[in-house]
Amino acid sequence: MKNEISTIEKDKFLSNSAFFLKEFEPLFIEFFSSLCTSYRCHLSQAETREMASLIYQNVFKGNLDSTRLREKFLAILQQDTVIVGFLVSRSMFYLIENYMKFSKEKKISPQLEILITSINHFIQFFENEATHQYIKPTTSLNFSSNDFVMSGNNMIDIFHKIKEEEGSIKFLNLYQGVPINYEAKVIGIDGENVTFSIDKLQEIAMKLDGHAFIVQNKYFGKHIKADIFYNNFLTDTVVLNNFVYLLNMPAMQREFIRVHPDIVAKVYLHQFGDTQTSGRLYDLSMNGLGVLSSENNGIFVGAKVIVDFDLNSSSKNKNIAVEGEVMNIIECKGTYRYCMRIFPKKGMDKKIAAYILQREQEIIENLKDELKEYIF
Image (cartoon, rainbow, N blue to C red; front, side, top):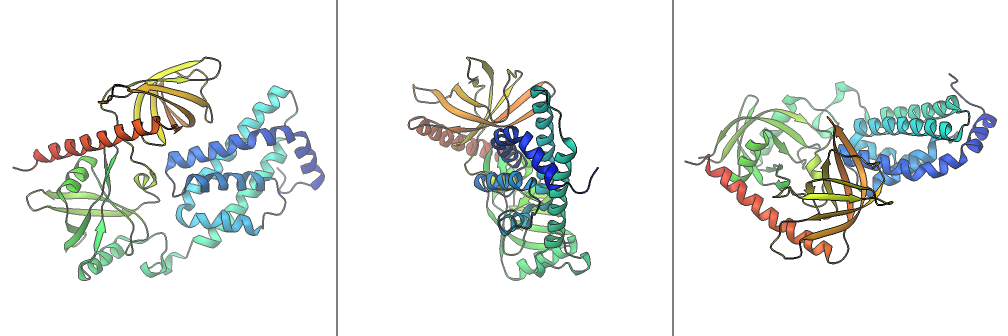
């Protein structure tokens, strides 16, 4: 395959593929955004869409050394270099797959070599910039340099510093979709084991979750995951070890609380042309929901649907009908999980908000009931 392509060849490709490239751009942006949502990278919806647009616009440029691309795109890699690298590569495969479908449907000869060479050129630029900007020599890693990776010994040293300064850290766990986050103090360190004084609700949420998660703060530049070595609900303490840094923490990416329903709510997805897909409500927030279904009647990422379901509520009017957009589809063993953004209109948003508040209170009470099993 060629390392470079001539201007004439590229112009010919752009001319022959102009219709595809124009029509496919919004689909590419939605696909990239849905991947970011699925992998919970540290980016807002606006940032993911801008990044996707910049990627698409620059794939076919001969000179990628643009200030806008560097400032708006590459700077984001400081937080999620590995994840963003995967998203770029996966979205490029998506571009190739759809170009092949387009060529087949239109019965034109695909110019794959030019397309792949352009993509390869962009990815090499991406890799070179990411490596140059953000990968530091491993011999110089230390806490003050804010590098991405630090050893376990450095973590323990930092916990010693937190204890000496009587500082605090914040834990975060999800229980049935509701975030449980309380501050904690370091009260003891024995080798690789660190003991924390902790709120009872955090401790039970942590135990049920199976792991501890520490939110990044002035001491730690990244979120941390740890194993639970020992719980003591009588003294409100927990001992943790095996601390590792995380690329991101999914729970931190949620703009709104996302709760699991208290009933098996039947959901209907209405598409254009009166096509209907039924499923079960998986979770719900003010701007999104998940649906589990054994059906796929042509639903695709980017599809616009009307979502219709009933909530278990004290209100007589339980029906919810909102416009939705499919952001991601996760398929596993014949079951589809549709991840959707929803756009509730006035009236519907109040019903959803009231239900979420009600469920949040119920879930917290459930967590308190779980706690009673460990307090004698």
